Length: 433
Image (cartoon, one colour):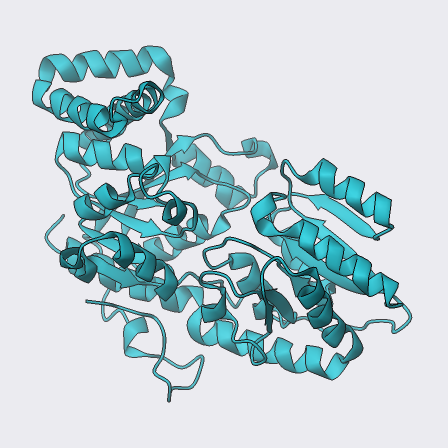
């Protein structure tokens, strides 16, 4: 069974679809969201999703493995409020973990034994893997004990990496169901390392952010588990990310904006190489890279060596990115590996024409030549050609920008897609008070 937010081929983007309707509020739907880090500057869609579900009447508490990536004083008020209410598993400390383990062993030995057995099984007799699994087991005991005390009976997990390993162990040990939102792509490349097959089999239901994502889970899982997979797309709030008037001086360089962590998989080096080709052809441009990561020194050295005008802006807040998008002429993302980037959705919603790659779920968001331009990943030449088309043709920039915004309004509209998400939760959690 699939509940997909995508309208029928003959529907008008932005209009209501049956998949987007929630006939009534859901005041009795209670669940815990388990996240790796919350709030996080690069994952504001977690916050938006939780807040939208609460507007629909859901009672959601959040548990996070790690503390936020910023101090509460540097967060917007809404994020600081969420941080104050979130249960942080690692912040409880080693002594607390030992206390919970001892308490569980003495008062609920079956819970302890079930969890320990799962951890040892996941370790597969490999010392390193076993050590990590035991750490996850300790975190799972803390999580399960907290959920029990809070009266929660369902766990929902975003991402399928270590955070989902903790959730799966907790679910098996404490005997409560869990569900997953799977983004990819890392777990698709190393199925065994991420225990992907086991996580699929134990999950009550699974939300996939794209058809590509679902196909990768179907590749791994036996057909008996396919019906538990639902495509529920991510989205952006069109009231936050809406077009702004642009008055650009034709004498100023075209600004190309890229938002993403500075890591190899985001392809910023390919984008820089494409810029060197454009500069050699006499084009005037400026590249702005928003994000932080281990590749920054290497990228800066390349830009200096080749004379590419680049601004390294570091990590930026939600509001700051919206402001930068308002000033950008083109948005480019040369990724090698992705799920479906929210950064692309935000740019498209603001009518910034986008260039990206034929990777994973990106072609579901951008149809080449209709909503933006797509090029083969790893090709500086193809990226340069696509950027050149947009630099030389302001009318093409405008038409693709408008079409991209229409695409996001129709398929990647956050309030609309959260309604679809709510329908899935209500279907599966209707008997959980």
